Length: 401
View 1 (cartoon, one colour):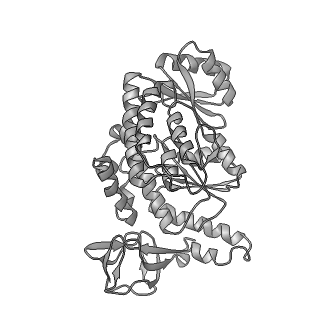
View 2: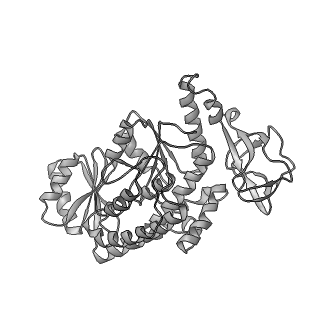
View 3: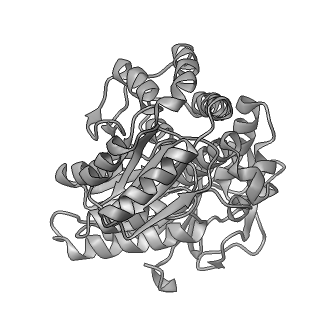
C-alpha cells in the first residue's frame, strides 16, 4: 500500500534501550539480525537482547543497535504492504532512510553504520565534548548564545520549535547554559553523551567516513530522502556521498525537515525504530498531521488500524478496496523448503502473535500478527521460497482495525 501521505522517519542515537529486540525474536523479520552479524563481524543478537544500558550508550553500540532495530521494523511494515512516498532520518536515522529508499543495501548500511560509530567514538575520545538541550528559546536565539560564548560550542540539533541541542566542550556548554537562561530559556538539560556530535569536533570522523563511503555502492534512492543538513529532498547518489560526510560536522535541521515533508504533502508521519522520540518532536512541529511510532509487532496492528480509519474517511470512489486490505495481512515464509501446516489450522482459526502456523523445512513459521485465518496460500507439502505468502489473516473481527 503506497500512499502519497506517508513519510517514514527513522530515529538516531539515543533511542536505544536494553532488550529492545526481545519483542521481535519470533517475528520473520528477525532473520535480518544474522545478516547484520555477518556484515558487522560481531554478535548483533547479543547486543539487541543482552546489552545493558551502559553498554548500549557507547556510540559504536547504540548506532549499530538502533540501525538494525529500525531495519527489522521497516521489514515488518513492508511485509504487510505499507510503503511511503518520502523518507527522512534523524542523524544516524539518515542511513536507515537511505536503506529504506533503496540507496543502500542492508549489509552496506550495517558496514557504514559500524564504521561511523567507531569513527565518532574515536573522534570523541580524541576531543572530549558533551551536549545539552535548550528548551524555550527560538532557533536564532540559541544560535546567538553559541556565538556570544568565548569557547567551542555550536548548535547541533534543531529538533522542534523551542527545543534545540547544543554541543561543545564541557566548559563552553556551561557558559552557554547560563547565557541561555539569562535570555529566557525555560530549562537547559545536560545530555549524557561522550562527544560533541554534529560539530567541528567530529572532523576526524568525517574524514574516515568519506573513505568508507568511497568503498560502498551508494545508489540513487527510489523516492526523495530529506537530508539533515539542508532539510531538502535529494535523489542523486553523488549528492548523498557529500551530504553524509558533511552531516557529521553540521547541525541536524530536523524540525525544518518535518515542515518540508508536510509542505510536500505528507500528512502521516511513521517513526520506525526503537522508542518514540521523533513522534514527540513531530507532534510539536507538524501539529495537524498524524503521528504514529512503530516499535513493536503490536505497533503494526495499531498502524494498520489507523490506516483503515483513514481510508474509511476518504472517498470510496478514490480508495475502493483499500479499507479491506488495511485489515488484512500475510504470513510470509522465512526460508525455502517444504511447507507443512499444523494439524489444527483451519479457516477461521484465531491466531495470537507468535502462534505456530506450521513449518518450512526445519524452520518454524509463527504468525507475527493477531487475526483470524482466512485461508492458506500454500498447500501442505508444497515447496515454497523465501518471502512467499503462506497464509492470509484478517483482523477486522478482533476489533483491531
